[in-house]
Amino acid sequence: MKMTQRQRSRRGGFTLMELLLVLAIIGLLMGGVAVGYSSIMDNARATKAETQVNMIMGYIQQYTVKNKGQPPSSSVGLRVLITKGITNDEGILTDPWGEPMEYKVPGTRSKDKFDIFSKGKDKQAGTDDDIGNWESAN
Image 1: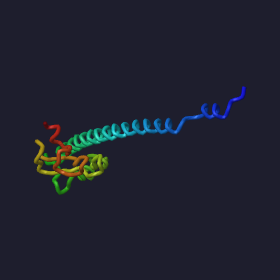
Image 2 (image 1 turned 120 degrees about the vertical axis):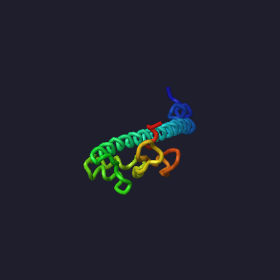
Image 3 (image 1 turned 90 degrees about the vertical axis):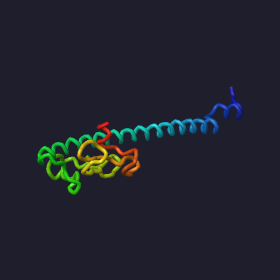
Image 4 (image 1 turned 135 degrees about the horizontal axis):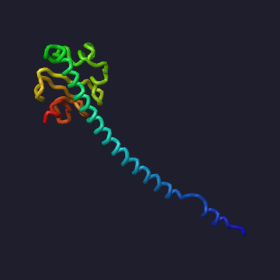
């Protein structure tokens, strides 16, 4: 049985409209995944910054015990934790957004003698997204 030309062309492939519809659906799905991924990564960075602040607090407590009850001064900063052998993890001194962790003695925002904080996503100190040792005190 022979097929006519018209019958053969109807049996083959997808139309341009069908392909565009599938591509549009895939694009929408990928856009939703990208937005969700961005939110998850922001939350992960904030959690990592909180963990780093808590770890640095522990290192400062070790330093304080070894140095007659005094935390590092602002002039020597957090770098002294590495030079005195309290930790060898230099990465802990940089927050997840690539900025150095901030350290201020005397502290103004925490109940401790010092403030340790990350400037957060906006990389500006003194804003609502700062993550510091005063958070755990609340």
